[in-house]
Image 1 (tube, rainbow, N blue to C red):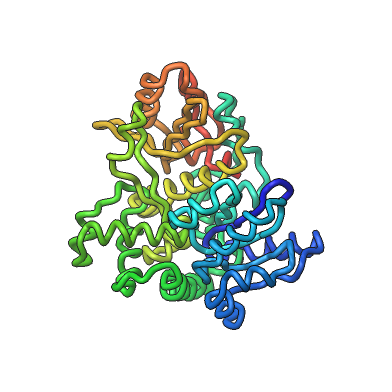
Image 2: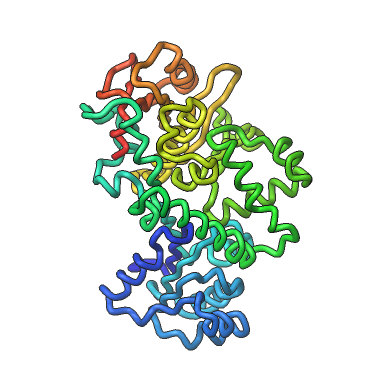
Length: 393
């Protein structure tokens, strides 16, 4: 707000955007928050976005701005006339980067802050693990818990503030209502796709592929939709912050876009709900346990990226039998690899993908970590370590 004309806080519904922004507005004595969840305000913004923006006192705070699609273009006009910083603080439950017209219009004028469900490092304050691994200095952990007790409760609770504090039965009701609202109302705000009624089924099928490669052929066959339609609908789910696709990493930049991404749910509590599972299944069913734990670890790292000291992008790596669940690449080319294993003991096979990544990247490889359910940090070789799940917070 101190140096940018427009600040846009975006993220999934119910992650705390409105609470965060309202608290900021009150602490800084900004004008009252205008929410477009209010029908009167929304209708006014949709009917005459330029006039609506002109009447807002500055700094203007607008909640759920995506509900009036042309509002951001009117904001662009306003900040082109007056280039002083801190004019608009907006929130939205859809990713404005997916709207090319809006993204191009506000380039250089808008700072985007992505708010994910709560990270464990926020619940239990912990130094940024991305920074530590890029320095080649993993934290020395000696955890008191081992096995499923190291991760089961964390995965089941997820990071949505309201859901995390509820018991299992109430949490199931919360996720059911959450999906009904998000898939029905929010997606219709950002898309005129004809078969949005297929979205709940697509999301359930996608959850079965969580932490795995996206199988567009399988999804297309099960839904009776073309692969292009499935891809566009997955993009909508990503725009609404329900899923996140992790692109493939390859040594050459040009090769990355043509390889299949992996799919993750943005929240593991939501993932278990969609899979029809609960905390008791974790540690007893190998497939669900491995799937949920990898999803959890990848998303915890993604949440920490914004707070890292340098810009870092996230990928996965797969070549033949070698794979790495998460590859973090800094702007200067430094690389970190992360593998996820549910067991409390590790074998040489568990670090083979990291060793291959180290050989490919040479001195750019700063650290490889196998996140596991054991008690302590253990060196595994040159720039390789085993790290307990607790290293994430």
